[in-house]
Amino acid sequence: MIRFINNFYFKALLFILAGVLLFISSLNIYISEKLPQAQEIREIELQVPLKVFTSDGKLIGEFGEKRRSALKFEDIPPYFVKGVLAAEDDEFFSHSGVSYTGLIRSVFRLLVSGEVQGGGSTITMQVAGNYLTGRDVNLFRKIKDIFLAYRLEKNLFQRRNI
Image (cartoon, rainbow, N blue to C red; front, side, top):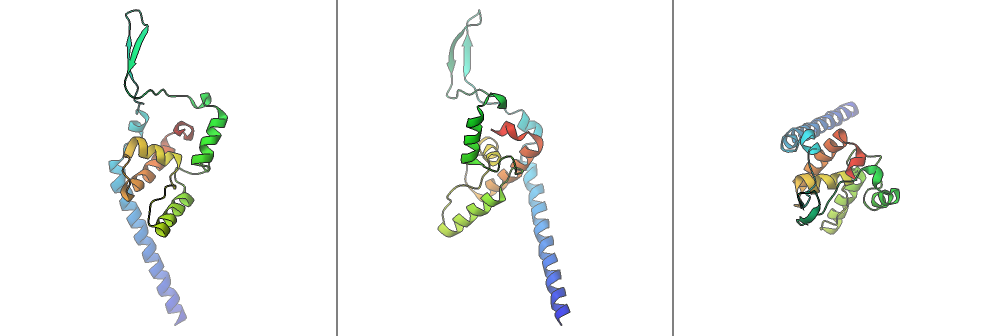
């Protein structure tokens, strides 16, 4: 009798595990088709202002709301990097784009309070959300951010995300 019960629970556990794996695989296939590919991610450029020059090459003015310029990682002061990592993602160099502890903590806070209280996203997930998937707050976007964070980590160096 005990052998039957153990065998039943073992089969039930295997069935549930197979179902979860099938669901995750299906979700991966469905979402991956909708996400930008690695080459598209590499080609993203920052929005920069329109620059107007004289005929001899002198800058007359800049027009536009955004004033951005890309920096090389080596040009960013180390204390600034450490400060950003301490505030936003202290596991940055040890995770693969997603912090499971951060996500679990965020879900727990949501269940306890009934409100989204932030947190849970790594810097890579924030880059994915802000530049690639949009800013709307819903579960489907968070799942897309997770898959895209894995893609970013796999195809780009972590240092480029800062």
